Image (cartoon, rainbow, N blue to C red; front, side, top):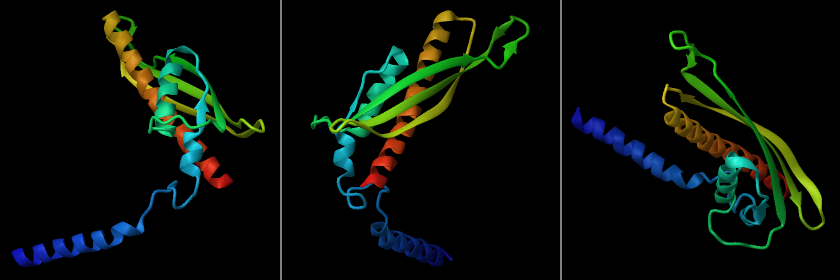
Length: 169
């Protein structure tokens, strides 16, 4: 019994190792030559407000995580709006015990030379946080939710931009 379980485990491991080389990332250099260089050549225009700061940093890291500064071929312009909803209210103290931060980012990717819009879109996401009767804890929880929101928006925007540039080439 013990040997048969071990043999099945080894067979599954051998199958997984043999198929491991068959898969490649969706937007890899082999599948889309020049895409990685195009993504690194995107300049992210400054985005307003605190959430814009977080979103801009996440976009730069997502598009060009190497730290290199190639000559910009594209400019990504993003405007963010956010709102906070409090869906539940604690009846005894008449205060919200949870909140949802909803962020919408409208973005436009433009080629710098010649100047023309390559792709534009809109991304929306939400992050939930708990509220308490302590003011500082609420501020910190809201900021943490904004950071999560910015990261989710950056992931969605960078994925859509990569898809648009991959389809172009």
